[in-house]
Length: 253
Image 1: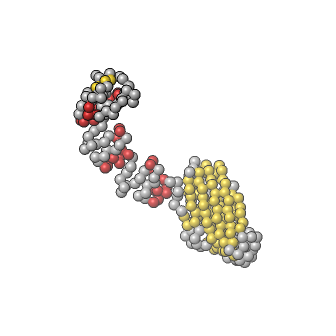
Image 2: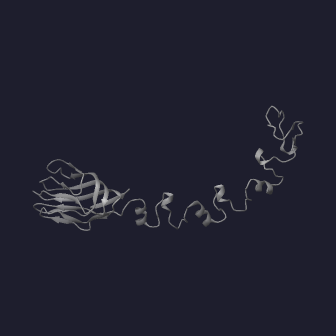
Image 3: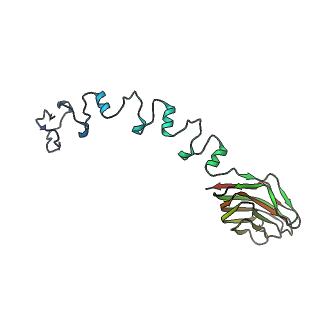
């Protein structure tokens, strides 16, 4: 079919219309015929036929998921098409979101285990390492973990106290460091560091002065044997204590 314009220009089917050929502005109401879809038209004489040719439904009907749109006529189906749960339901980890309907599951989905805290103060008057109540977590083989710990403590005069990270879990790789900070500087300085490259590892407090302080440790473990990880505390003479307010947090990868 040829397209004719009142400007006097006639173009045969397949001709390329250029600015050179079109010396006058063409008003769309002045030409007749239809332009095929392959040539940029709709190949239709009516709006309904044009929508059919272009696979576009009427605005009052459902927009198709196949056209990268959800089923807009129904909210529930739209959410399903887009992989999004109802606002009152849980948001899927597959959508990079945690299960926000439940804090415990959310932490697990994101690789963050529930933190634990000591349930009571531990007082020691001898050098036997004893579990700090509540500071025990479980590790699973095949998972990499980072264990963060903070323990406030007090030491008596002439006491040589210490901590130990231990447990039944094993790791093919253990890498971390502990820091002990004293309120009054202890006997050897305000900050003591200790590398942790194995389970178990002892962390001495290294002071003979009465003092208070904090142990902060961060240890990454590539677990190859399921079991527990925990902190213990020991004294020497006098009474030394692992105080309330201690905690452990576990992150998995």
